[in-house]
Length: 265
Ligand SMILES: [Zn+2]
Picture (cartoon, rainbow, N blue to C red):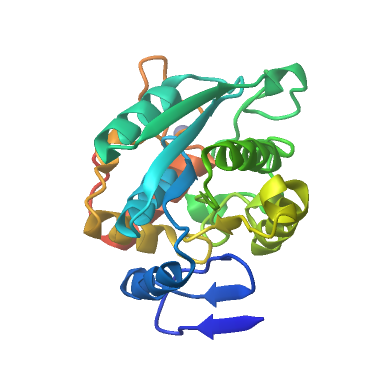
């Protein structure tokens, strides 16, 4: 396996075939572009889009890398539909080629504060977020989402799936960790016709080792309009963020790190 390690850079992605690029940033998109010239396959990307600030940033990163964006969002029975509107706003703003809204009902299982009648935990700031896997964890959500993305990618002839998981400023979800992303990429290789035919599907997680502040700064450089995004797990009926759930607190920490005001507050 060829490993390209760029220490000055922030992104870690798992990329196709026997190449793993560790820690590459925007300035090293040229590396990926040169790889693409060799393989001539990097055209369409499926990007998981929740409407939060992470996925909005990932859409911008994939666009900068030269991909045509096929955004994939889910109505999975989450406790509010406000993030659906945010996903549509972000997709429109980014000029995606296609935006698929997939309906699946994880509420039939429940088991999470986001898909069952369980209170969303609140705290005073990010440093007070309880350790461990919180009740807002939706069982196997990213496995389910990536499985749909894999099917979508295979149908449209894409070999690149982007997901905005983050393992630095995050809620401790097990399916946001680098090992999970690497394992899913192996699964993708075994599970698809493209894999059997000798192709590969890459799971790219460019934010995985970035802080929230770094993510926001990168998004601003790329022109992301964060006023279009939504992060709160438990918003008021009219959409106002609660400012006390884990997601709100991590978002607040990010804007504080970035040194700018959150445009949605
Ligand atoms: Zn909130």
